[in-house]
Length: 315
Ligand SMILES: [Fe+2]
Image 1 (cartoon, rainbow, N blue to C red):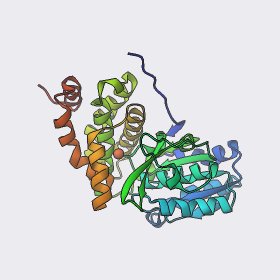
Image 2 (image 1 turned 90 degrees about the horizontal axis):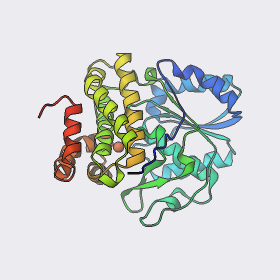
Image 3 (image 1 turned 180 degrees about the horizontal axis):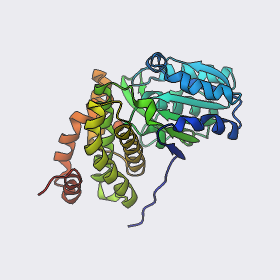
């Protein structure tokens, strides 16, 4: 079978990786940027770790701290207005998947007219869009892998549903994965975001045969191995940097895997439940994953067996 694999973003990773930000901002000739985050990240003192090197690089910052969980079209349009009014040449986000998807939405609107809802995918309609500005994403959770995907999930407030966008403007110019940024993440958030990463990896492997991709499978297997081993450690000992790093890289690998294959039933149900009940995405996918795998086992038994063996099960 002919298949192709795209790696969607250059990644710099490892403890202390944020230290490259000043040099990278200069290298990318960023003069004015919108820095996007939520109030929790600011309260945790993480924003300052990003602000400082950017200011040192001579970047003028406009800041948007209104990111909400399950980012909405309303907040993205508001952040994009700020970015457009200030004519920024870069969008920089530090936070979890909601922040990264907000940044992707903003960047789409920096390169294209209208509001974000104009670009929601409504199969079979996939609205076309152009690239935006430079996009730097610094994940503080290990789950969505959004730093390495070409899509975003956005709450469609008018229709009370989760919508998706897919655009070249969503491709990060640079992703910086520094486990130091996630060391303060509480156990429940660590667990739920980690389950999202696990769901990406497992659903990527057990997708329909027409979507199978050998490189995605290798990435997903490594992600599952490391999440099974290190996620419980990260949940119980959040300061364990080795566990944080393994989970962060597993999240990126799982994100890259499903960006090339897609996910399936677990996420379909998970998004529906999340939009209705406003439950965290990782918790929804953690709940639905087992049911999804049970359902697809008859269709792709050898892949379900592979997932089990990768988790250390014997049959
Ligand atoms: Fe997910």
